[in-house]
Image (cartoon, rainbow, N blue to C red; front, side, top):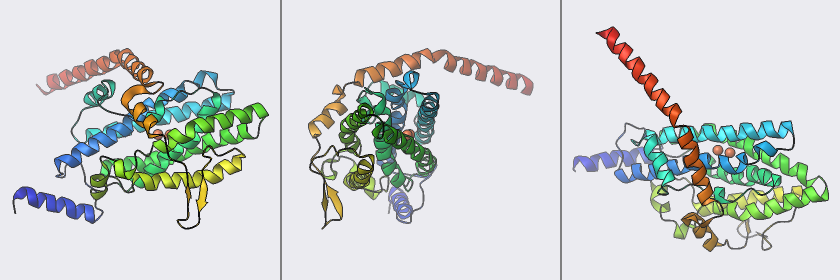
Length: 316
Ligand SMILES: [Fe+2]
Ligand SMILES: [Fe+2]
C-alpha cells in the first residue's frame, strides 16, 4: 500500500467513526476543495444576505422593530466572519475569498438576489429564509470538518432567534388590519418558492451531493432537507390564517409527508447564473463597501508593521 493510500484509509476510518477532521490533518485534495467551495459559499451568503434586510433598517416602523432587525443583521455579519475563518483554516486567504465573490467565481445563496419590496418581506425572510437555512444548518452541526461543525453550533443558536423574530412579525401583520394581512400574504407568496430552492437542485441533479454525503460534509440530501421544511411550514401558515402559496400541497398518508407542486427550475438556474433581480446590485454594493473600507485594512497593516519593528528593535 502506498503512503497516499494509507493516508486515505486513515482518513476514511475517521470519517466512518464520526471523528472530526481538523485543519492540520491529512485530507484528500478534493475534500479540501469541496469544503472551501461549500463553506465560503455559505459565508458569502451570510454577508450578501445582510443587504436585502439592511435595506429596511432606516424604515423600520418602530424603535423596537429597528433594534431587533439591527441586531439580526449584525448577527449575520458575525456568521460570515466565523465561516470565513473556518475557510481560512483550509489554506486560502480572506483576500482570495473576497476576490472570488466579487468576480463571480464563488456563489452565494440565490435567495438574496430577490428584492425586499415591503416591510412584510423582512418578516417573511426571518421566518422562511432563516427557517430554511436552519434546517440545513442543524444537519451541518454534524459535518465531518471540525471548524465548520463548531461554527454551525453557534450559528444555529442565533438563527433560531432570527426565525422567531420573523415569525413574530408575521403574526403581528397577519392579525393586523386587512391591509397588513395582505402584505403578509404577498410576502409569503413571493418568498415561499425561493426558500424551497435554497436547498439546491433535486438530488438526481446535484453535482456535488453523492461525494459530499460519502465524506459526511453533507449529512442529509437536498430533497430530504427540503421535505422537512415543507412539512414544518404547513402548520405555521395555517396558524397565521394565511393561504398556502402552493395550491397542490396535500398530505400523503403513505409517505407521512406533504406532497407539493414542482418548483420552477428555470427560474432557479436563471438566478444562479446572474439574472435575478438584484445580482448586479448586490455585488456592486459589496465592492463599494469593500473599497470604502480599504483605509481600515491599510491602517491595521501599518499598525502591525509598527508593532513588529518595535519588537525587532527591542530584541536587538
Ligand atoms: Fe446567518
Ligand atoms: Fe439568520
